[in-house]
Image (cartoon, rainbow, N blue to C red; front, side, top):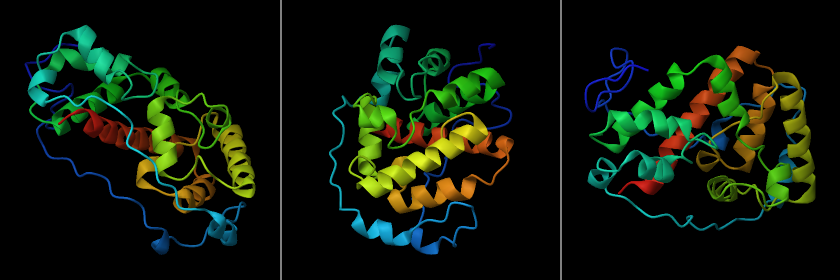
Length: 228
């Protein structure tokens, strides 16, 4: 990737890094239309979900001015987990310091991912765990993923919803070859299940791009957890 002038994101001619990006807002379950997929959601199951209170994961907060002064090793150590098991995004982002804002940093990281090849993008998508899947049940999630799934209520599902989630995860993985990805912190169990059902009818290319957009939302929220 060719080095640009300070603070300028790769492919900046297509997107101005300093431009404000809208923070995604949670999906609203009330406005969702009935699913037409082959996996209808049993709405009565949702009544069994108990309210889940989860704590913010412990993380050191860094002022942006300190971020801009970090050496590469420190920067990757701090931001390497923003994209799940993919520190290469932080490594490729570091040379574009200084960043004018959190949104500028996010824009640069987005451009790094956008500029990666299809194979590397697929590897990034596959690095994400299934929601309420095997890694979650065995306690092997990263701290970030565990916190995010807990906030959405996915770590305390009753047995019938756990089974339903497993069925949908398996159907999605069988069709697309990568895990279903959604920004859990902007959703809840109901909206996640409905999205899984609805998106099973999409073509692979649509789901590939949707997964990358959801990963971008996850990254934006993780950055907000780190930067003051």
